[in-house]
Image (cartoon, rainbow, N blue to C red; front, side, top):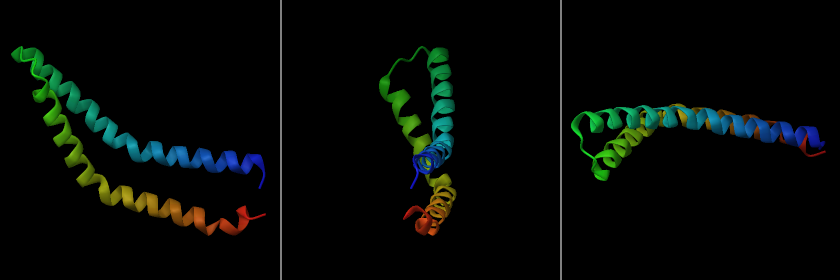
Length: 89
């Protein structure tokens, strides 16, 4: 296996990780912005008020995105393992 092939595999792995994490990070970002705006409007600076809704948003996002994420990771794994003979050189 050439160093270029290893770099390509690692690049594909990192890109897959990015695309799987991006929707959840976006959900957390927008939930954080919304919660911050509510805290500014109400002058409430309680840490539980900012943490619990963000955790609920992540949980709901994870539950809704899980089938898509599993499909993507299974397809990537099948592609990677399907090319295993090519990597054995």
